Length: 176
Image 1 (cartoon, rainbow, N blue to C red):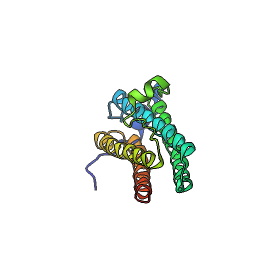
Image 2: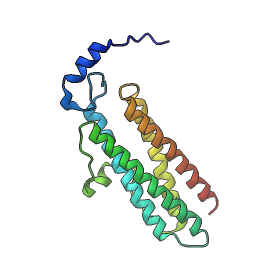
Image 3: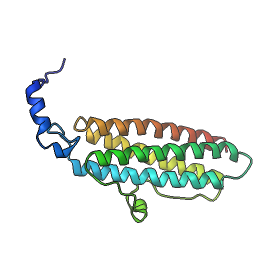
Image 4: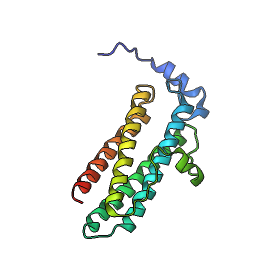
């Protein structure tokens, strides 16, 4: 059992009415909200850049093994888009503004947008981008720790899927 002490009901009720304009951000929120929003926006940019790269690869895939790769590209593009939506939603919950400005996406993204000129290069670039996301999200999760369990859980869920994506791209690369 933890050494934590639970707050009595009356105190919880009183605190809930104070600063009600802060929405989901209560007195118990321990993270640096502005820094978390910055990390979420960088991750949003990463997911959007990855969505665009996967979409391009879906449409540009050609060659004898292209249909299998194209299916993976499209599935990953859709999942990266879902990740972006979750990140944007959390930014708003924390009182921030999600940055969808196209001029900022490449600057803020952890992963680069490298098109690749053939199927093997496309798969390789997607694998590199997934590996970047894996490392950066793992570091963000460690940075957040127990200060913002909701944001940490979002990143943990995204990280698990990015690891699956990397595994898929690794398998595809071996087959090319």
